Length: 301
Length: 309
Ligand SMILES: Nc1ncnc2c1ncn2[C@@H]1O[C@H](COP(=O)(O)OP(=O)(O)OP(=O)(O)O)[C@@H](O)[C@H]1O
Ligand SMILES: [Mg+2]
Image 1: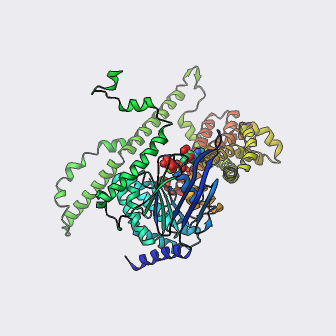
Image 2: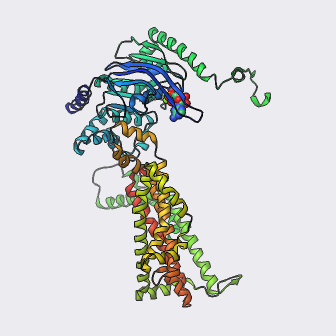
Image 3: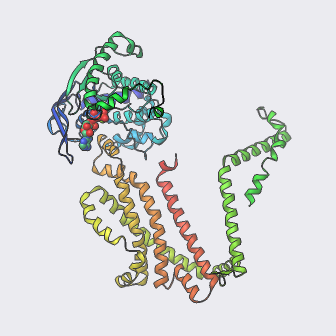
C-alpha cells in the first residue's frame, strides 16, 4: 500500500471517527405504508443496535420489511412509531454520514466511474483537483483505476457494485448501509465482493448494517445477525457469530459454520412459509409435489 | 455507384500481396525497394481491414445511392415524357430544369436571401421555445404545484395546430416578422415541453436517493440528477420540435409572408415558374434535414455517455 493510499484511508477513517462513533440504535420501530385499502403495516416494533465498528446483518423472508428498516436508518423514510438514532441523534433526513449501497447499482449513468466516486466529495465542496486524486486512490484500492474514465453501463455487475461501495465510502461515513448489494451477482463474483467488503470494513473500522436473504452471506460477513419475521416484520432472533476473523472461504465447511447455518435456516424457512401462505394454497403445494412418473406434462393432460 | 465498383474489385489485390507476409515479422530496416513493397502491403491491409469493418455501412450507402439515382431517373422520365395518368406530370419540371433554376437563383442571390430569412425565423422561434419550454418542463416535473397550475393551460392550447394561430398571431404582434416567429415558437414549444416533462417523470428514484445519501441538497439533485437524466428526452423533444417548427414556418410564410423559403415556393406557383416550386421544396427538405442533424450533433456532444456505448 502506497503512502498516499494509506493517507486517504486514514482520512476516511479519521472522518468517521471525528464525526462520531457510528452507533445505530433503532427501538420500537414501526412503519406503515399508506395504500388504497388503508395503511399497510410493513414493520412492527423492531429493535436493533449496531455498535461502533460492528458488522451486523438483517435477514428475513421476502417482503418482511428489511428494506423499509434500512431506508428508515438511511433517512429516506420516517418511522410511524418508535425512534431511529445514530450516535444519539435522531435520523430525520438522508446524509453523507450514512453511506448507502443499493441492490440496483444506482450509479449515475451520465458520470464516469471517477466522477461517480467524486460525487460525495463534490457535494462537500472539495475542490476538483483534490477530489480527483482522492477518487483515483480509492479506485486504485478497489482495482478499478483502469476504468476511471468509462461510463457505468460498460461495466459488469460486480464492477458496478464495487464502484457503488467505493462511492459510498468516499465521503467517510460513520455507517455503511447495504441493501442486498450482491443479490444480482453470480455466485463467484459474490464471494469476491464479500471479501472486498470485509477488507474495506476492517480497514475503515466503520459500522455496517447489511441486508440480505442469503444465510451463508450473513454468517460469513457478520458479527451478529438479526432474523426478522414475516410481515409485519419484527426481530425474531439475534444470533452472534463467534467465528474468528479474518474469515476464510474454507470456514464455510467448518462444523461451527454449518451449525449456525442450520439454526438460521430453520428460523428463516418457518417465516418464509408463513410469508407465502397467502400466495401458495394447499392445491398449489400439492401441484408442486406431483409425481409425473417420467411422463411429459402435456401427455398427462 | 462508385462504391459498388470498389467492392467488386476488392479481392483482386490479395494475391499480389501474398509474398510479403514472410517479410512482415522482420523488424530490422530492409532494403528500400522491399520497404516500399512492405508499406504498400500495409496500406493494402489497412484498406482491406477498413472495408471489412465497414462492410455493412458501405452496403447501405451503395443501396441508398442506387435507390436515390432510380428516384431521380423516374422523376426525369415522368417529367420529360409528360406522363398523365390521373396524376399529371404535364407541368412538372425535370431535374435538369430544377438544377438550372438553382444555378440561376444562386447567381442573383435571391434564393439565398429567402433561405437566410427563414433560417433566422426558425432559429429565433426555436431557441426562444427551448429557453422557455425546457426550464418550465424541469420545474413542472419537480414541483407538483407548478405542474398543477400550468398543465391544464398547456393541455387546452396544445391541440391547436400552429397554423391555426396565424390570424390570431397577426392580430397579436405589431409586425409580420414577429408574428411568423411566434408561430414557429408555438409549433416547437409543446413537443419540447412535453418531452422534458416525460424525461422528468422517468428519472429513476433510486438515483435521487443515491445522491441524497451522498449529501446532495435540493439544488444539487436538480442539477446533477434530474437535469442530466432528462437530457435524452429533452433532445427527443428538440428533434420533434424542430420538425414541427419547420412545418409551422413554411405554412405561415405561405399564408402571410413576403419573404422566406415558404413564400418563395408559393410565389413560384403564382408566377408560373414551375421549376422554382421544386427548387423551393428541395431547399426546405435540405434545411429540415440539416437542422435536425445539428440537433443530433449537439446531443452527441452534450450526452457523451449515450454514444460511448
Ligand atoms: N411504497 C410502498 N407502499 C406500500 N407498500 C409497500 C411499499 N413499499 C413496500 N411495501 C410493502 O411493505 C412490505 C415490506 O417491504 P420491504 O421492501 O421493506 O421488504 P423487504 O424485506 O425488503 O423485501 P425484499 O426481500 O423483497 O426486498 C412489503 O410487503 C411491501 O409489499
Ligand atoms: Mg428489499
